[in-house]
Amino acid sequence: MKNITIRAATIEDAAEIANVHINSWREAYKGLLPQDFLDKRPLYFKNRYELWKRVTADENQVTFVAQSNDNGVVGFINGTNARDADFKDYCEVWSFYLLQDYHKQGIGYNLLYTYFLEHKVKGYSKAYLWVLDKNPTIKFYERTGAKLGEQVKHVDIAGIKSKELCYVWDSHNFEKIILAL
Image 1: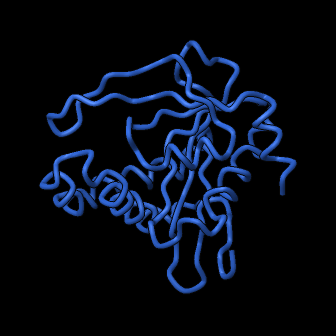
Image 2 (image 1 turned 60 degrees about the vertical axis):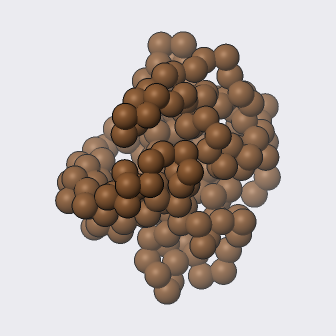
Image 3 (image 1 turned 180 degrees about the vertical axis):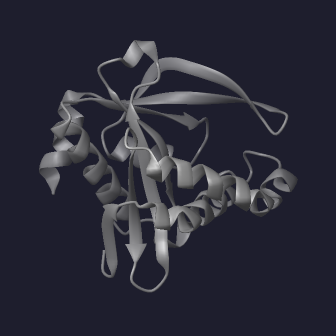
């Protein structure tokens, strides 16, 4: 992880987080969502920028960024307590994106570690997230100990009926990530 710093996001990071959000969508969902939809994602920069200004100013949400000394923010993780009633004792990862050029360098793992450590301090020992079916990042989540849950959401993205899968880190795997570093 040379030249990468994991730190709490600030409102000043909003534009760079928006950039990662848009470009990671284009990379991660290629072949899963219509290409014309993905090609238009940069047109939503203002929308994403405004969103991330609000999110980074929200004291109830936790957002960490991976910052490259050379290229600025290259990844981020965000969330807080669970939005789903079935997971009231869990923290939830709402957004987790890393530019493809930075995959397989331990950066995603360190973002997850930092996020879990912050939530452990808040009293959480389990976590979950929703991920689009067939998303290649599922392999990463599984390598970190997340298990496929029973819950499924059906969503409509760009006119395509899609399935979101729930991946869960139980207390053992949550703690395993924290103790690993």
